[in-house]
Amino acid sequence: MKKKTLFFKKGTVIFTEGSPVEGIFFLIEGAVKVYKQWAEQRELIVRFAKPGDVLGHRGLGGDNLYPISAASLEDTRVCYIPNDFLEATLQTNPRFTYRLMHLYANELQKAEKRMRDMALMEVKGRIALALLEIADMYGTDDEKYIAVPITRQDIASYAGTTYETIFKFFTELIIQNILSTIGKRIKINDAAALQKFIG
Image 1 (tube, rainbow, N blue to C red):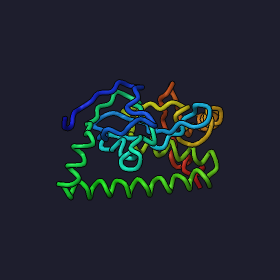
Image 2: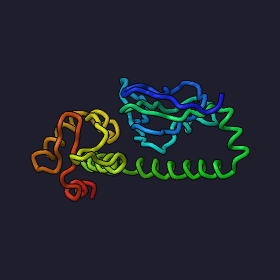
Image 3: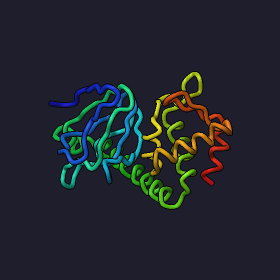
């Protein structure tokens, strides 16, 4: 079997942490969260993914188990490439191998920066940064809301904080008209004011 297109409905797990790596996924359309499980069944979101991003490549090599899980935030379509076809392509297509190497290097830089931010930044700064990053990644709709609805719990999991802290900070931001929300939909009214929390 060579590459094939797979469809995942919103909220579907694409692969699970600890399961065998059988291939990698190229995101064609949709939105995905990549996360790790930790204490008390809580999630730590490692990153969000958009069309053009690769999923599951962190499991290549080593013990061939996925070190993370991925789930669709909206209806999502991916191109799935099984390991044997991927390895044959890497051996015969230097350009593809070079691009994948750049992907790893870029992701490593982002992960290192994110670790530093999580360790050194105040919680309000981490939440503000998470909102700006998500808005930048997914863009906005016609009404200027972030195009992909993200739950407050997912924002908490990405910013390394609790739902309660997100709820309190959002209330503060809404009172100051920095943010507007309708259910899971979020609109950043004043990006500059949000940026000030980051420092």
